[in-house]
Image (cartoon, rainbow, N blue to C red; front, side, top):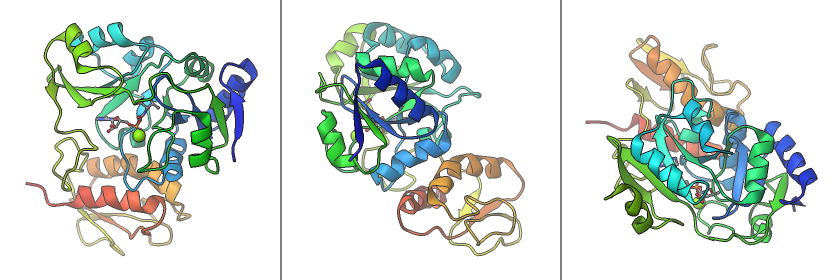
Length: 315
Ligand code: TXA
Ligand code: MG
């Protein structure tokens, strides 16, 4: 079981903030559900979230911010997004916006997409923690994959007590339902996930929404999602070496001494490196990327899921 501190206690906030800055996982309350938090700017810490949740795939995560003023360095605003943030932040609204070029949020938190999901929560414990950390905190709901979202610290301890260093207890969540996720198509708002703020409330501020069909969590065949990150280069999986014209991406000892997802064969390190290395290789020489076999265990399943999607034939 994890150590539990009080979200309203300054010392516990400081301890949680220190652990987050050191790359540890900390569960914390928000007004919607409890989040499993990591420093959003630390690829390895964000990868550890997926390992703790035992997620079979890398879904993009919400990064939590102390204030709307932090958005400008991370993402590009549009008018509708600003109006929604003015109306509902701090609160149960998540905005999916295009990443700036120098966005410091780890690519794995975007699951390789060109966008980031951002939210300023209203829970006072969450606000104190975010202010103490001074960085965005990536956090999905603090449950194991496929289980319901936790709304008390006790639920979190049952679900993830062995995987998380510290839990901040802020009492039962006021809303108890995840945040509403809004994206934009050509600056027009799209509902990607219904949640704590209703469509009627949103439409009262910015007018008619379209309902998204491309939420990353909606059922889809590999490659069906236009928004899924896929390299321009062809990808060949389970390769033992590069063929002519290919660049090789190794894992552990299966390596040509060049690029390697993790020379020590560490799947958390490999996950943390995956999207950044694929982007780099996609922009470099060679017409295809040959990837070494990744074991189908732990985070290897999520890595293979993304690699298979990226390798799927595209029209
Ligand atoms: O209330 C909440 O939203 C809670 C608390 C902890 O903030 N968090 C939460 O996170 O529910 P999670 O990871 O369970 O759900 C994140 C949602 C998913 O539906 C995901 O697909 C969507 O946000 N999302 C995140 N980044 C996205 C992106 N770049 N594009 C589209 N959807 C994105
Ligand atoms: Mg969830």
